[in-house]
Length: 301
Image (cartoon, rainbow, N blue to C red; front, side):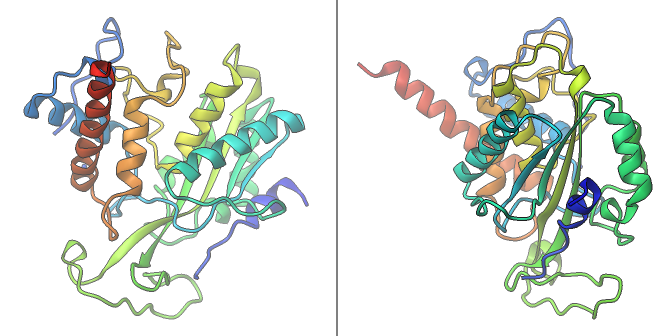
C-alpha cells in the first residue's frame, strides 16, 4: 500500500486572558516549584491550557474514544516499533486501547529526509485527507498552510469529529450524508449533547533535523502530539514540558508532570464537549493531585 493510500485509509468512523510571553532566561517551571496558592496555580494552569490546546474553531478539545492504531513508516523497523509501542503505552495509561497488529493506522507517523517536501506532496496530492470541506473537523486553511510550509523538526495535523455523546454518531452533516439527529439536552452544548473525538492524526518527522535527540524523548513528544490537539505555535518555554524538546536548551527529558496532568485532565474530563475552562478546571485538579503525591513521597519515612 502506498504512503498516501495508507493515510487515506484512516477515514471517518461513524460507530480561548492572554499569557505573558515567556522570559527565555527563566528556567522551565516544574510542578514542585509551584507554590500551591490558589490564584498563582490557577493562573499558571490557565496559561498552560491556552498555550497547548488548539481545537478547531468553535469546537472543543478532542480526545480518542476509539482504540488507536499507530503506524510508523520510512524508518528502520526497530525504531518504528519503539515509537509505536511508546505511543500505544502512553495512550493506554489514559484509557485509550491499542488495536491489534495489522490494523489500519489512525495515528500515522511519517519520517522523511525532507519533511517540507513530503508535507507539500501529501497536502497537494490528497488534500481531502487533511481538509474534508466541512468546518470544525480541523483547524482550517491557514493552519494547513502552516503544516505544509513548516520548518520544524516535527509537524502534525489532527482531524476531529463532533459526535453525539450518547450514540457516537457523527453530530454534523458531512458531504453526501444525511442530516444528523443528536439526542440529549446538555447545557454545555446549548441543547445538543456533543463531544469531540479525535479521528486521525498525521505526524511528519524531519529525520535530517533531529540532531542528537534521544529516541525515548522523541517518542514521548510524538505521543503528546498524538493524544492531544497541541498548538504548534504554543509558547511553552516557561513550563517543564516535553513540548520544549526542540527548544534552544533542549531540556525536556520525557513527559513531565505538566504533560501527564494535562493528558489526565483531558481524558478524565466531562463526557460532553470540553472547553478551555473545563480543561483548566480539570488540569488544576490533576496538578493538585500530582503535587499531593509529591508531598506525600517527600514526607514518607
